[in-house]
Structures are given as structure tokens and as C-alpha cells.
Image (cartoon, rainbow over all chains, first blue to last red; front, side, top):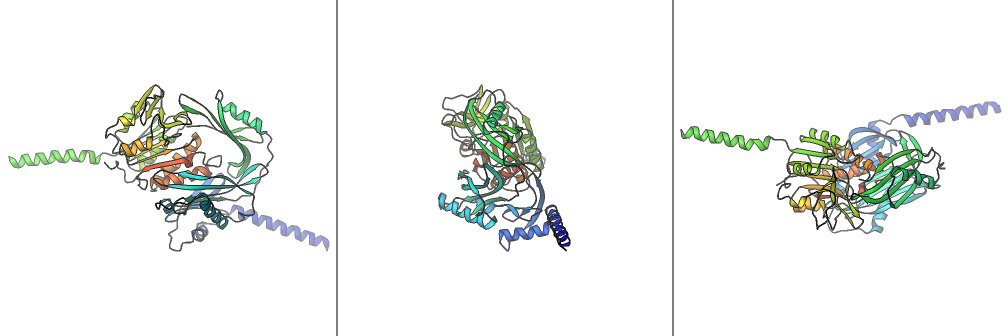
Length: 258
Length: 232
């Protein structure tokens, strides 16, 4: 009798894992994705039209126009992972939010659109007022989940019009972390590798962080992301950005400043 | 006799007037660092929008400076000017250390300098100038401000620049998205903003890395289609 129960449990577990695996590789279809966009924008009269499919390293997407912007729906989970609202770019004039007010708007939006936002170890890794000239300005808020010392691809970006308080754009990614969070290459060694990419420069400013990145479609890797600013040569800033695989030390990106 | 003369004059006037109207607006694109293939990519998008577009790698500053006068669209991807943190911006570097600069107060970076301030009304009919370079929208006390010189002083319709440091890979990513989006009918401001978000998540590593410092001067809500010159 015990054997039958154990075998039954194993069979059920196998069935569940097979179904979940199938769900993760079966696209939800354009129509279901469109319904999710409708729920996300929550504006009944908006015209939602399928534009194209996009295949990125961090996911595959159906892209829709929403009349006043765009929405990107994850093909397999159905989650709206990016949205923009072009009409929110318009500057309404004198009304101006301060940082605290803008952060409150962005935080509320993140909690509304990103399940589990308050329960995750989300760190505000970037924030500030960005001046875009005649278009006006926007407050940008970037939260990323931190596991040990590594920033993960689980993130929320909310850009808010500094005049109207309207959300201009949103990015919200939530993935299971599948790679190691223990670097094989130390911080100091990573900096040495990065410096070799820009030999003979005199570094006057630098930054380094551990980041889990999608380095190939669906493949996560723990990396070191390093910037090196060097004294100018021929009136051009030296140095740039280097991304290193934190397990192997392989240079994945070496991009000089323009 | 008078009748024939009248027909002849009318015919000549029609030919003269139809010449500039039927000519397609021109666009020039320059890759001047490790930024290929953004110029050729932009050229393809501009051509499909109806511009007579060309691209060049490592052009000399004077050639671009002279060509600018007949351009509807001018696109540069390369290095920006940097003396030090208090004196940066106001210039873009072409080959042989030649520069196009907004102006000068007596500082002359590089070997050859060409100034927007020396234009008369030459670039008044430019629709869009894109300076994809470090600090290209930043005011430099030595060499001025490329955006305000292009739009406010010289009358071009729109100019885009960047206030911060840009790395080549993010610049390439922004450029590809921007030209793709304007070709698909987005306004300049929408395409600039959306291309910024494309860079954030499409291009390793995650993050804007300076692309979010973009600035637009002029008629930012304009579209690049139909192909045309700027308002004179």
C-alpha cells in the first residue's frame, strides 16, 4: 500500500513538472497577450494593435501599440514587462514635482504593476532628475533585486514626468535566478582584467558592480561590470565599459567612451 | 510673337521651380569611431523614408562641414570634446583630428577646426541634426553648445545630443533603435525616449550607461516623414 502511495506521488510530481515545463515553452498567443495589455493600461477606449514579435536574450515578446505608446508582453508568461506612454512625454508647464513626490509616484506604480515588489530585496540602484532639453525632464527610478553582492535581472524601472507626474515608461522583469552568485574572479582581479582593455590610460574615476546578466538567449551569467574613466588624449575622454564573466574571467564586452 | 514669348517664359519658370521641389532631401551619416555600422544602418532607414542618404566612415571634418549646408538630416556617431570635467562638450571629432565645433573663445582643439558659428543661414533648412557623442549637448565655456548653436542660433528645426558619457555599444544600440523607430512613424521625441529604454534591456549590460542623458532642442514632436527639409 505504501509503495502505491509513493509511486502515485512520484507520478503526480512528474506530471506537474511536465506541465510547468510545457507552460514555460508554450507561447500564450497574441490574443491572450492583447487582453493582458488591455488590463495593464486599464483604459477601455484605447486601440491596441499587435506590431511585431521580438526575441531578446532576456525573453521573447509580443509588441503592441497602445495608441499613445507601446507594450511588451512576455510570450510565455503573459506578463507586460515593458510599457511606454508617449503622451506623458509632454511637459505641462510650470508644475514641478520634487524628488520625494516623484519617488512616491514611481514606488506606488511599481507596487501596482510588479508582483512581490515589497517582499523582494529591491535596492534603489539609480535615481535622479534627467533634463531632456526642450522636451522637459523626467525623474528616473531604478530598483534591482540584490542577492548576496549581486544585482539580479529582477528589476523595476519607472520614469516619471517631472511636471505632470505621469509615468512615461516602465520596465519590470522577474525571473528565477539560475546561475551561481559566487564569483570565481575576485574584485581586484576583475579590475586588473578591465585595465588591460584600456592600456596606458590614467584612470581618475572607476566603478565596479556584480551583476547577473543575460549573456545569451535564456542564459544567465554572473558578471563584473566595470567602468574606467581615463585622462583625455587628443581632447577625447579615455576608458569605457568592460563586462567580465565573474566565473571564468572572460571579457564579454569592452566598449570605449565616445 | 508675344504669345510664344509668354509660353517660353512660363515654361522656363516651371522648369526652374520644379527643380528644387522634385529633388529628394539629402541626408549624411558619419561613423567616426568604433561605431559601425550605425551610419549605414541610419542611411538604409532614411532611404526608405524618402531621403537621398549617404554614409561615410572616418570622414574629414571639412567635408562633413560643407556637406551639412545641403543636408536635411545630419547624423554623427563618434567622439565628443573633453578638455576636463569643467570644459567638455561643444565639439565632435572627425578623422585626422579635425573637429566641428559650436564656436571658440580662443581654444582650438585638434589640428583642424570648423565652426557652426561661421555658418550664415546655411543650415537653416536642416530638419534634424543628431550628435551621438559624449557631452554633445553639454555647454563648454571654451567651445559653446552644439544644440543651441544648431537650433537657436542657426535655425535648424531639431537637434539631439547627450549630456553624459556614452560608450560605443550603447550608442550603436540607441542609433539602431532610434532610426528604426522614426522610420516606423514615431515622432522624434518618442523615438528618442523609446530607443533609450531599448538600450536599457536589449544591450549587455543592463542599464542606460549615459543614453538617458539625451537632450532635444527644437520641434521635438516632429516626424521625419514625409521626407523634407526643415522649415526656413
